Amino acid sequence: MSKPSSFSLRGRRALVAIKDERDLSIVRRQFERLGIEICIWQPGCSLPCRPDVMLIDDEFLPLASATQRTLPARCPVIALLGTETPSRLKLVLELNPASFLVKPLRSAGIYAALVIAFEGAERTNELKQQIVKLEERLRSRRVVLAAVLHVMHSHSVAEPAAFALIRRAAMEQRKTIEQMSAEIAANGSLPRATG
Image (cartoon, rainbow, N blue to C red):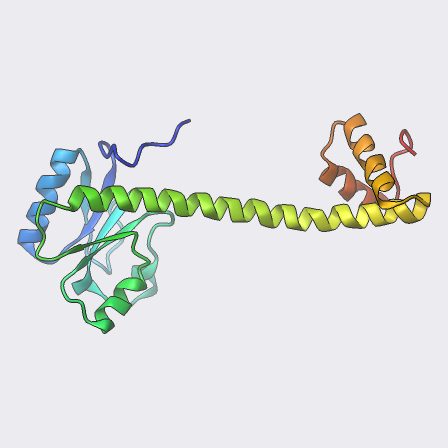
């Protein structure tokens, strides 16, 4: 399944927490044009929908209770800034916003903020997935190293030959080197066919 384009917003759902009625009407009008469904949220209440993006007015900050601070995972946040004081910006940064808009809102800039938020969230998620994969590889390399050392000692061979024995055993059994290394660590020896 292909991922949706950050530039195509039709069919997405936005959770909106805006105090000012004028700003809210501008957001509603722009979102209708873009094909985005709006769910209105009052902090402290349960989430009325499962959003793809959130617009949070800085007037609702700080989000005091734990339930208010529990925002949907992987959901980009667009902060609506009314003041640029350091204390207010610090509260906004706690939301980890993917983008922002300055109040009073105008229709110009809303599309750009949405695209930047979706693209930024997508890139962040890709980086997180890469980190998880690299951490898994790092953990598995320790297992491979332990297996290579075990084969080196048990077969009295050098490191390249020990690794070659593990690789050949993995190929014969149609397993990854990491899987074979884990088996060697668990069983204490290479499978008999390759020994």
